[in-house]
Length: 236
Image 1: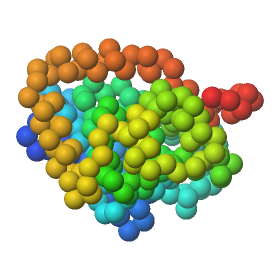
Image 2: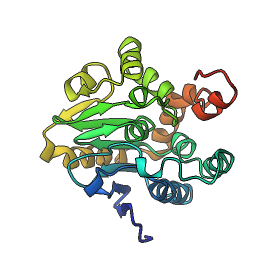
Image 3: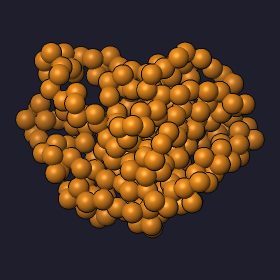
Image 4: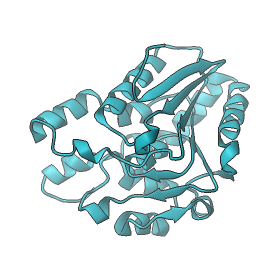
């Protein structure tokens, strides 16, 4: 495996383990992490042995959102959009045929939540907090969160999260369908590995087909919020 600076990647049996690894700053999502994740998910297209992907995070938090120190550092909006289109991580994850499990602990905010929403199975620790803070910052979730959240949770509750930016607890996340299991913090890794092993034990062609069919409704309906804003509509 390649040596990465913002993630740890390992192949254990039939599972590819991806660990976000910027724990001192809450595993905040920056352009380096985006590019490294893009490389990993590109690699997945060629590895025919992998049957599941497990995404976890080092430290107390899964991901506290975008690295705000990078805001405004792109040479221009045009250049930023070109780079985004060339390295469309979100579409790459969405179209990944391999089942993705995300094991979440602590804060899962903004782009961290959007990353988790693009996976297939989400579990979390009892101390997890989820939030889309964009309304409080005058922003719109730019990685499909306005669509994936409303298709994952009960619609009314999802809109409350998106429009108010209010945080939700692990209990609410379970009750409203954001996650399928809540476990003790010290069990989150073990639970994720257990789910991955269960998936690995089943015929991969059936797992991939079930994923493709069940996710088909998303593939043609994820709208890039930045493109929508640039068109002047201001809506997703």
